[in-house]
Image (cartoon, rainbow, N blue to C red):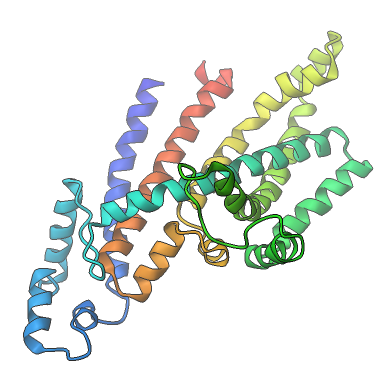
Length: 313
């Protein structure tokens, strides 16, 4: 396992290097000049020249990448061109919000998706199986922004149970925080739950027909133990991969959902940065997101060894 871990880490470094080049290069394709935007309506030539020199905008593209990458390796992601604040500070401000939203959405997705997938596989071709598949199809087909608007209309406008939008820190008021986050978390978790249900059902159907499951039943084990201990554990391998990828997607910021519910997470941060041509913020957020995504894939690979003893042999 240690050798495998070393090999995987060895592939992460060049991957991140390639990703950094891609992030920096694609960012430069955005139209507009940050110096012109920052110089104001007067657009004084001296001010524009000063801004270009300050942010190395007058340097060749390879030199600007080296400046940026050198600072990144020292933990400096640059400074926001618009609000003159370190990008790392902005990320650290938004990260707890996105982490909470992603974690709540993932918990909802896992509980609904895996449970529905198990029930659907165990009761194949029954009413429960058809119902689970219909709900899964609904979850896959429903746009997040539409579901969010409908939930706001029902739970906030008609019933008045939950706030329509906004965010409250859990350190200020935990109850208000959960009330403001439960709807966007469900909207995000709903779509992921549908995908997890399909994969769980498929994996469980394959495992339930395996020889070791039939042997466990022949020994007289209770069906619940056969399903949860013997079948589910081996069916979890594709679910772990999918869960890690989906969680990485959630961390990257669910732009539409955050916009609908006015959640100040990564999604809103990167949208504002793109519209304001704030290159440093876009590069910093995307780089952090890509690093988290790759790290989650590594953790998923390592989790295989804990879930499936055959891989440790």
